[in-house]
Length: 561
Image 1 (cartoon, rainbow, N blue to C red):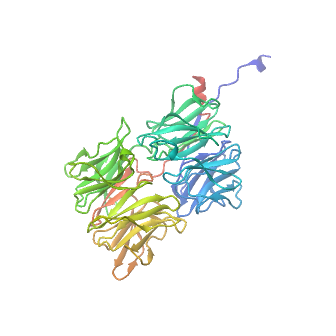
Image 2: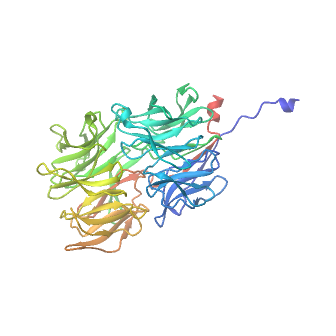
Image 3: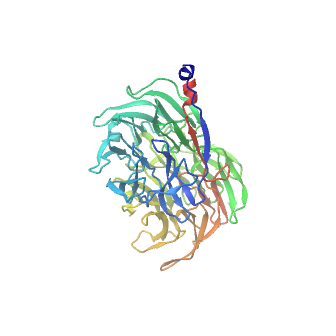
């Protein structure tokens, strides 16, 4: 009797790490299956192929998931509640594939990145900027808007849907103020949307009754009654230094059996570091800050960056004087200011903002004196990318409702209207003018992965592929005879080019591995006009891919308390 009536042994937490697979050049956010047996993640291998990979916890190796080829690089896998299927985005479609590895099935036409699969057999996913949250049957069918940003006064974006166990309600993040995200609760088929609490990241419900999310750089679990849709306690820390990106991405995932996986060390620890062409470190400009989308002044004496305030979280622009080693604040508005771009003469800085509810391009005198002016209002928001050396045109990126990322040109003289330069069903991103303004390089995923291409401006004309094994973030040298870019492995590469009546390019050559910070932000490196020095957004540790931490019985400590 004593044997059978003895108290059960308290569950034990077990922590261990999974190191990155040597075959992979880029690794996405981990997603553990609901039964806690397999971790899925989007990855790009050393040959530049994008695919979903699976890492069973009872195995020492990861393997690619057959049928998931072409999975978008900025998307995350979505598990079915029974852990038998994974949904993902590829080729402008939402697809699903059995974990056993059969051919993928198309669920619907869609351009998205993240979503959630309910116990009732439905998928809700987010789309492009300002797009609604979309609901569709996992068996396939017509996708319909479920929650629209128009339902919220002042809302600019919606994302990261996550179903609760009943499959009738889901959580999502609403950027209601432009300063911080808010966890929202929605019931499918209704117009009910209820704000719960501020958060810095996506959120997930985890048994036996918690919401897990990132708050002030810490992964926390807050007691939550899923039936009532109400919190029942304060947030409790799970792990430190688990940050989130500007759009709310955070690398964590929880299973119903008490398995938690997360990747830490990616919210802070950034530094702006000078390298020479041979890959030798020349010294740091600044360390420890959350630098975003930096831009060098034309004379390379200053760098402007988006930096979040430690207390308020508000993002403003700061200018670092590289000669004097002094940083000064450039913008002061409570709106989100980002993506700064210096004018060719160094007199102005153009940037993205959502001031007074108007999203678009703004400008201010680079001296810091004078008011901020609205340059162009763009409904879906805009990111300034490059300015022609004669000052006549500015190229910017924006997301179309049906065409994803496109490249537009804004004439800077007179009152001419902006016009599309590249607009298709593919993503065209990060344009960069040649020094003479007659050509521009850019990234596109039309081949199934991002490569660097060159076209004439404003066109028409041909298209030339510059990279051979994937590429991003192209930059022309000041003489116009070289194009730099990051290859699929994060190496800084260079290709010789010639411009004239036509365009020709040589073979790319790797210069060095700058260990760029793992982020979706632009301008992870900047080049001086002579192509001899590079200012890199680097990690503090020199590692571009962090190991994943797995915790078994993650809530054991919370239950004991």
